[in-house]
Image (cartoon, rainbow, N blue to C red; front, side, top):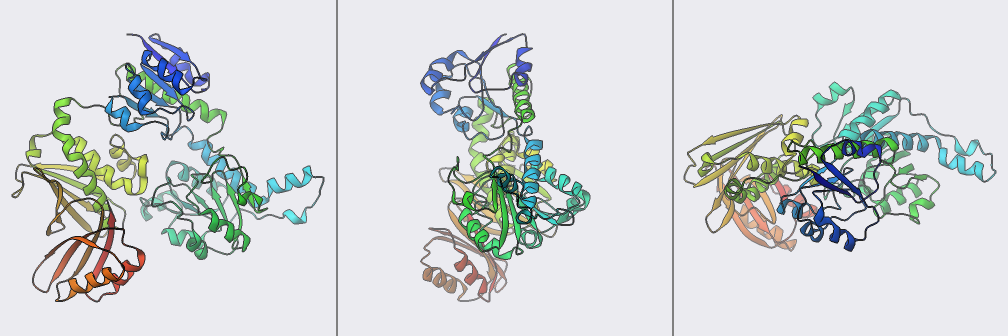
Length: 528
């Protein structure tokens, strides 16, 4: 069988050699099509390969009557409607590893340029000035580099920084002391890392949790004269806070490859002499562009020829009879994972998922993937999906186990998720109630009945008279309305749990005041 492939963005000719060499492929490269022209043409093709220029919209996907696979020559898939692709049975593949070396090298280049004032000194020479004293720099040797986010790129930066004889300390939600020892670097909390570092570089995805994580409060914790590098994503650093920190001399300088709004031609940070910047060049090397093109070309060929792909982004279509049975549990499973990870403030080492009742005879692997996705999504965001969730868990050193039993303890179906960390074990269980949807029915050993959605507060407390009233009054003073309340206890006067659903997120002030109540053991705000 022969296939037609449309390449709608410029790709390296060397990068598409795997396609050129295939006997059963016809390639059309048209990189100047308007969206309307692309929609007119797409119906004739089995595969579409893009970079970041082409917007693969739902409308375009609907017009792609013969589309089987979409390849993104790069990491991000923001320009592809993944939901629409999945709904139409189209697999999306990308090239997540191709720019690792390029981005790590660019980070080190920015680090050195920043420490030695190279761009500023060059510009001075271009302006016919010879001012050696003005551009005295600092050495990297024996300085401490704090790395926030130790994924593929962060790990590569750590290796290179050690080669410069820097001391390296890192923070990552999935990083442990044991892993740090194996890498020969230091380990710390986010606060510990930024307090100890002379240079700080960020390598996290941009999520709700990481947006502006380097903010005014974070700058206060840092050393005076610290240097900041961001070659990851604009928005991780609060740019107004960074500007103020540089002006006040708290921050000695910053090297930025990304900002929140791009292109950033006239940003106020660029007017500061302490700032060096590049126009989002982290992945812009000849080698990186070739590698991502090769990787995605090979995966597109694999899929068209019926083989397994290496870098799938969305979930391949399941047989209709299987999907009909398992799909109702996807939402419940992901929410159970998200709920549980918010209860645990340590790195997960083991996840045990048990299926009971009518789930005993169902293919549960897709449900497991959704559960693990819910757990990992807290820190990885859109980088984790149904297909790669188990792979990422394995890469993070997390063991995932499945168990089945026919006994559901009074429920028609029951999904139980247990998470083990170095010092604790937490559990949550949920079910699908006919006509009522998903419910959380157990938290640890407490019985509850909570819809897993919206803003929630989980309060562990002692069973004492007046506790519920005091908590309700406190929330009322903060103008937080309680929608539902579930309470269970181990025994009279013993430990108890309360789960509230509220109309808005529990702010830090209310959270702090709740924790000050004498009977309170722990309070966790959860947003599902």
